[in-house]
Length: 399
Ligand code: CTP
Image: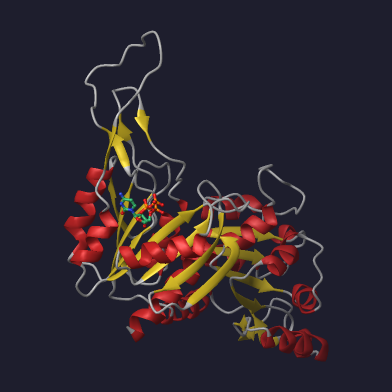
């Protein structure tokens, strides 16, 4: 299955565009989320509506059709993709890619993506054998893009030979095999916390922080895609549960403590990305507090330090904390790593623009208890999650 895999499918203008509809359907049936980009010529063969209906996602046809002002569509789509397939790929799109030409939505997005790229060519047998096409394919292959070679058979132009788009089933099989190889965390049981906590003052008011939960959810999503069995303990956030993730919703630090401790023993890797309140109101009022003249003082008491207790309780678990700092991030982070007996800590300086709580991007230092540091520079939280999990996977093999 391709559960939760984010696929961008680029359709260029050849008669085999009709087969891309079947490919979209097969990918969707396998659990992938598919977003389609069509070139102008592709739309001469099939309408965008066909793909929209099969993928149940909008189809992209124009680089300048920016529907969401907070994003740049081709960059957003390029970042979103786990894999990028071009099927059918004409001689023209192959030539554009090989030469870095970005003059439409498809060629622009492919330049911007860091996803794994698959290209399934389809064209006339002589076009396919032309030295220009061969050279362009060789250039592209050297960058690590993978070609799914066309099959031999009857071609729409009347010739019989190599040039027919590989069957959608075969394309899906190639992708599934590659994804299976990527199951870096297969068999690992992961416990991840995310989001803020809310500490009630009365039925109307609470004490909380700016955490959006995006980093913890990105970690859960990537870990599940890489084969881990993930339990996500989430504070109050408005985020979709990633595919194949068991989610437990909590509200207060005490509820998070209970949920985390209940699942700790059965976990191999524990990542505490949640921003837990360190204090809660000493008294929670049953009824709404009415305003009075003068100032108001609310007394707070400490909550339990969940991570610190996990550090003391730890057996086989690889325990990872987060440190949100506004100054001296590395030295404060190092202190937390030691005092909470962690295996690693992810440190971010939330004062740096573009990173931190509400943002879609992050930049972090991964500090291992050996003192070794890795700096993961500004990227989407998804990309940072991949780098963190890749590093954890290396560290658990050594530890
Ligand atoms: N943490 C926790 N329980 C708490 C407070 C924090 O489990 N009551 C965890 C967080 O989930 C995070 C790590 O401890 O993984 C560090 O949290 P942070 O808020 O950066 O630091 P604190 O330990 O609260 O220290 P300080 O407020 O002094 O920075």
